[in-house]
Length: 623
Image (tube, rainbow, N blue to C red):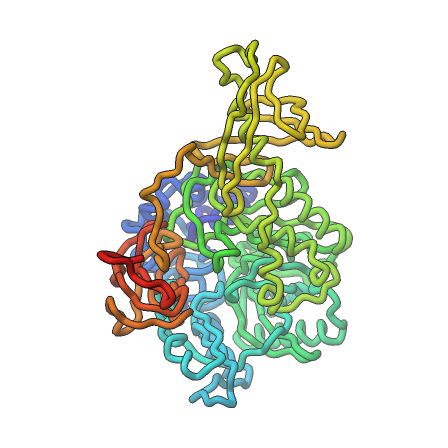
């Protein structure tokens, strides 16, 4: 039996596996990069082993170092989690060759399915060869790995070269394998998958369906089980195909077979030979612990002939540190507080006060709700997200809540084009007009030099905040009765709670402050200085780094003085294992270029200036 397990991964999935191991009495070993020295998964394990360096290629993608760590820590088994080396057959072989138990399918099964090109051929399909105009649109896709990395949609032939280069670079960075291929791109299909679990005795369980259609950058955002509105005939066909794929490679352990469903037909995508991020929805519906089942299978136990019966409905959302309104730009900083109400499962790799860095995926947590019906699960999860305490960098929380409430989602009619159609409406600013006033009143509590009131009329006090990207100014005053503001009755105001009444309706605001960051209920504000810094203004057409990261590429031949067109890609940044393109905001002339490949940048750093054609230079400088 397994006594000590090393998890060859980090963050949320490592913590999740450790939780099951704790329940089973199995000791745990974490590996950590220098960037993760104080990370939650490092703290949660019984033993932790350092992998020197910070970049994935130097740490979590070094199978040799991880095997050495397992042996040094006295582990007798290795669980790969997902991502990184989880679908690397050479790593699985190295683990087995070291005399350790591998929690997963055989290296041969991984080899057959981990490469999407080989998996398609196994299912009788072929990737596209040379692409012509008639083949468009196509999807460029990394042959290894997953999570939306190394994927690009190509709608014009002149975009193909850049798409191939970008996908190769992103795949190599994320998975250590730059192989890509092309396939027809199916517009607005549903992304449906089947969870399987197989033992070494020939039993394969198809554990229902999941719908993962709501995606950004081909990475899933909201997942649920079972897939709503799927005809039983099609659901049965998907389960049959999933079992067939598993049996074709003598699969053992947990895995997922993914399909695109369009016009009532199933199109095979790939088989993920690992646990999936969205596995908790299947666990909730079937009453299973899939990690515990993986460990039991690895120890040689046989599954029952039939899987347990499903019950109810489960929905999972991925909470990302990102700004959906700014091309999903990842965010960094300190996660001051993260908590959800009881009754909702929260899987996270972060604790209060932990830093969110640039090296890894920006997912903070997964929140999962289970209920007897889909409508009840939607309501429970949306309500929990609305009242969750999330103090830290900007997140996609509002997008998730609005998505769950959207009629297309509640009716089960969503597809993979959901965010292409609705992103602008889902990310439209909707700041609470009372939040800045509540922040100002909480800050003003106890600040008056005259005990809160004066014998002469008090002048208005002014506070400025940035809310939802816009600056706002609020006014209040100290009176004999306490703090006051026009049009609002201040019922209570202290440093942590403000109660306001407008037209007889009373509302309570929870206020927390960390430096210049102020959180009022679910809203994040930035306290601004009373007098703006006049030197902080940038010239028109300035391109600044939207996030911390690394410049990985500058457009070929781009030099100062070059003429550029509106939307022309100029600079590529890599942050959190994804590449982000910075384009010319308008047609004009590149008057300044400060970016070069390999350069580390911080948010707000000036990268380039494009002088728009309609703006004439002032004498002696740039207009």
